[in-house]
Amino acid sequence: LASPPVWGVLGAHFGNNWGMFGLLTWMPSYLNKELGFDLRESASLTIVPTLFGILCAGLAGSLADKLRSDGWKLTDIRKVSQSVAHMVPAACLSLLGLSQITQTGPAPAIGLLILAVGASSFSYA
Image (cartoon, rainbow, N blue to C red):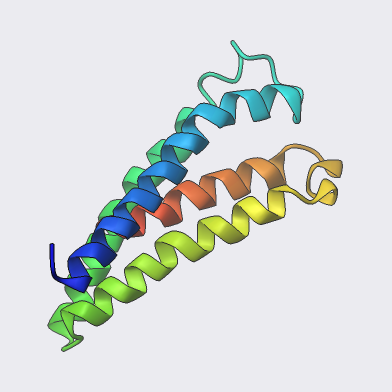
């Protein structure tokens, strides 16, 4: 516990999990209250971001392996992966706060949710 990198990994893992579990519990309410979806009908829609996240986790792992074989330092790969995993979802969720996003229909908001969950999977690389 005296190692700063250990605390960095601990903090990144906590932040990622806190954000993802918060998003998972908040998403059905958001789809219902903000986008007008029926909770029963939107149940299958809430799994789409998670499925995309699983796909992105595999992609992130393969990309990390490729970068490692190209000579990248392991710490640099981890820094880039964690940056993507935290900055992209933060930007996506910040954009959801703009009222203009939902004025054209639910598709842009749902796309941002899917992208946020997918990008957060880069923390597993």
